[in-house]
Length: 112
Image (cartoon, rainbow, N blue to C red; front, side, top):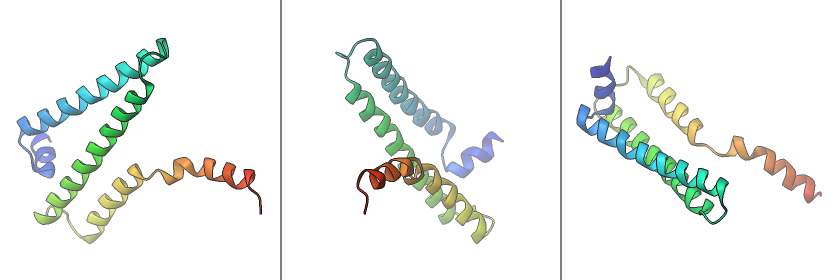
């Protein structure tokens, strides 16, 4: 299973591990700022948000690289599998469904 997973990423174990260490470091730093801001407003909540955003951005970049690698190396079984992988990633990173409640509030605040 591990070999198959690494194959689908197009990475060696070392590269995969290094990427995940980098992601974990960003996540831990973001968590520390978030926790610290909860304890004291002197700790930057903005920096926590920046780190959370950086984590998402890096995830998007790697997802695109992974999907491109799979496509370029004929690792998708068929067109439907490739589209399904795209849809799953696009849905994961799409903010509109989460922000729909705010859109409704905007429409209510500014009727007609």
